Image (cartoon, rainbow, N blue to C red):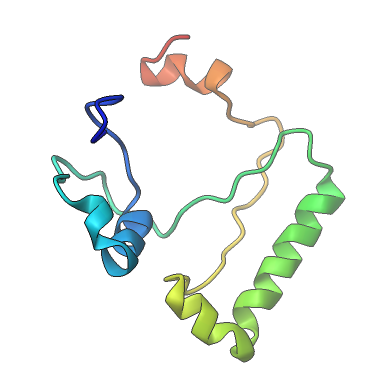
Length: 107
């Protein structure tokens, strides 16, 4: 944005907070013009082609990481408090192709 390649950007609150804490100069000259509604956390997204077994392994691994007290300092530094898997919605995959038009977007 500073180089003129963009006029506006959507930056999630966790990324903004991490930049503000660790690299405040990177936010110099930028300002927040609006906010979206708060949500419990940021999504973790994988390919629609990811096998169910791999999704289960990823969920199990992330749950183990956040529940291991030895990881708390790292998780605190990354502003991660918890991990809550979102229930699978068979046949309800979202993509730009099928969600975009519903949101008023077109390709």
